[in-house]
Every structure is written in structure tokens, then in C-alpha cells.
Length: 554
Ligand code: GLN
Image (tube, rainbow, N blue to C red):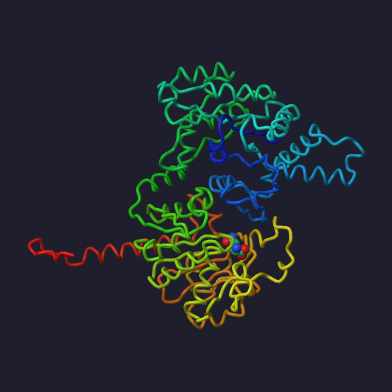
């Protein structure tokens, strides 16, 4: 029978529960256990698909098309656990299901209540992951202990220990130990209060993971243990990581968390093996090159809006022994200041996915700059669509060419909606979502990168390249090098006579891992490094003024 680990958060939000869960999952996997991860979110939206990236950060898409919380991105980057739409559910989804059952008459006339009907629905959704081939299910409870909306979830996880026996359940509480400069002390009281809230609900945490800026002294560990009713060895320090989030699992091992978990769950496992992970960190710390890539988007101010893109760039840097410095560029800044001013000096330009008109002109200008200046360019989803618009207007002479997403009445709809999408009224989950196959052209950049002619990537879009214009584009040098297997949908485009100009309709960033960079990101960063090296060489060969020569005044 699978064991359950529940991870709650206390004191403040944004403590990095997702990263901690992903790290625990990775450590247990590296001890040979078969792990599943899931996140429950107490908000009422049915899924994060319709939520603004400003509020919620990136929407992480799974193979099965589920639009999920970005913490699932951490789960995938750290572990090999398969993720499906059962791995992320919200209060909205739970109530949707309960109400559907009530309408069908499934409750046989009973009064439908939070306890037991909603809590049963939550328990069933959690237990669904505990299949026969699973050793441990890790469930992250979104929000902070004390939130009203989180109560049914806490009640449900309390009941699970009764249902399957406490020996099969572990409660881990992630909390904050702030340091008060004025007092020169670390403060444990907020943690005591948050654990007290949990205990009022009937949950005694087994392990406390304490987020902190500084090392926690032994006295403080003992105090937290005593007041929170846990063993001192179960008070684990999790110090802020300045270098990389990928250090988190290693530092948790330094505090014996993996051993403590398997001991407490009474599991026998093989010894931990994280050598490959440690090697990856060493490579990350010792890059041979440095490149600067501009990411041109419209949610740039929100750190999490392009999370997987930034991570995938980092992974490619690890593979290419390069530090990738990301310059985050607001597309509208290019509209105001001009591409030349904002983009000069970059070794590569990436235009990620997005929705809606705002910022599109800046993205198009950025692509023109990269095309004309032969700067490596990588377009993703909306990035492909903007590249198509740019090429249509500036090379094919199609004045005012556009996507019908931006201009319904454009004379040249080079990007438009699929016929079957025309009648959409519901916004949630109505896009082309999830994993689809692509056939690549032999010898193309994409083929060289993937080393395969048939690939599958995740999608999240409504609009498509308009095939009517395909031959016109190809005659002018923008070639289609990847399509859906039936040849109907354009998936990859590349520019001839350019060192590296490639755009995809899919979202390859979702499948990149620190230990296995995505082939397209890897190839892109490789091209950026080459560009940087050529520039360096040219700079070093440029004749310098002899010191005695007078310098002309400006
Ligand atoms: N807005 C575009 C579409 O719906 C692109 C979507 C995206 O970049 N994810 O097709």
C-alpha cells in the first residue's frame, strides 16, 4: 500500500513548498522509491488555465492537456514521476464534481455537506494517485495554514491518517523562522502559532522544515522542537539558496531529511544516489562561457510568468558549459525606445508565448532586429506567430498582415483560428492543449537538434499558421520544417541564410530538466555561444590605437 506525505505551509505564503515537495520527491526517487506528486489548491477557479500570469505566474501544461499550477513544473524538473490531470485539483474542481453528483441524484436525497461529502471527494482525489505501483504519494496543500478556504483540505488529510493508519502517513510542515535585525535574534513564535493552528485541527506535524536566511542555532532548534511537540532531529533547517534552486535537495540531504522520512514511514530503501545531480551542480558552478539572452514578453515584471522558459535556458546553459544571463525585456519598452537601443549587445533573442495584442508590435520589432542582425532567435508559440507576421510584412510585402487574434479584419490573416474553434464561448480548456506529434524535415535545424524525425511536444494555443501563405513564405526563405503528422498544421519554421532562427508552435520549455536540457534550448544556447565567441575574436583582432597616438576629440 502506498504511503502518504502531506506538506502544509505556515506563517507566510511563497515559502517554496513546491520546491521542497519536488526536492523530497527527487530524494525518495533516488532511494529507489516510486513516487507520485500532487498539488491541491484551495481557490475556486476550476483550474489555473483562465488565471492571469500577473496573479498566478505561468500555467504549466501536462502531456494530457491539463493546465496546472507552476509547482508541477518543479515536480517534473526534479523527478521522473508521471504527472496527469489528477495531480492538481482545486476547490472549484472538487465542488464541480460534488454538485454534478448531487444533480444526478448520487447522494440519494441526503443533505450534501462539507463533511463528509466535500472531504470525501478530496480524499478520493488524493487516494486516486495511490495506485499499486506507487510507494509514496506526496501531496502539497496550497495556501497557508489558517486560511479559511484551506480548512476542508486539512480536515481531509487528517481523516486519511485515521482511514489508513498513522504509520502510513507523514505530515511535514514548512514554516518560516524570521531573523529580527533589531533584536539580533531568530524568532520562533510565528512557527509555534502556526503549528498550534494545525494541532487545533487535529494534525500534529511529524517534521518541521524551517525556511531561514541564517543557520538556526541548536538552542532554537530545541526550543522549536519543545514548543511544537516534535523531535529535535525532525526540525530541519532549509536555508535560502542564493546560487540555484537546484541546491535545495542537496542541502536537505545535509540535514538528513531523506533518512528521517524513510525512518518515520518505516520503509527500507536502497542508499541515496544523487551523484548525477551533484555533478550537474558542479557544472553549473563552473561555466566556461557566458551569454546574454533577451526574453521579450509582456508579463516580464512578474517573476514567475515565464518560469519554465528561464529554467530551460538555465538547463541549456548547464549542457553548454555556459552561464546564461537573461535580460528580461518588456515588449512595450521596445515600442517606446526602439529595438536597436534595447536589444544591442544580446547574444540571442527569445520571444515566448502569450495572448492578446498588447506588446505584439514590440515583439515583432525584436524579431526583425534578430533576423536582420543575424542574432540567434528562438520563437515559442506566440513567438512563432509574431515571426510569421514580421516576415509577411517586411519580406513578403504583405502590408498590415496580422494574426486574427490581434486584428480580425486584417487583409492578410497569416495567422488565424482553426475552423472548429470558431464557436468558443467558454474560455477554460478550449485551446489545442497537451502533447501532439510533429514530423520534422530531414536535415533541418530542428532535426539536427532532436536527432529524430518524429517528436512530441505540449501545446497551448488557439491560433495557427495560415497554410494559404505557406508557398509564398517558403519562396522567400522562411521554410516550414515541422508539421503535424498529416501535414496540415505548421509546427516549426526556420529561416534560411541565418545562423539560428527557429520558431515552434509548441512549448518545448515544459519538458526541459536540469539533468537533461531540451534539445532546442540546447541548440539555441550553442548558437548564442558561437555568436559570442565570434564577437570576442573579432574584438580581440581589432587594431588598437597606439598609446602615443592623439585621440580625436568628439
Ligand atoms: N495567443 C496565441 C494563440 O492562442 C498564442 C498562445 C501561446 O503563445 N501560448 O494561438
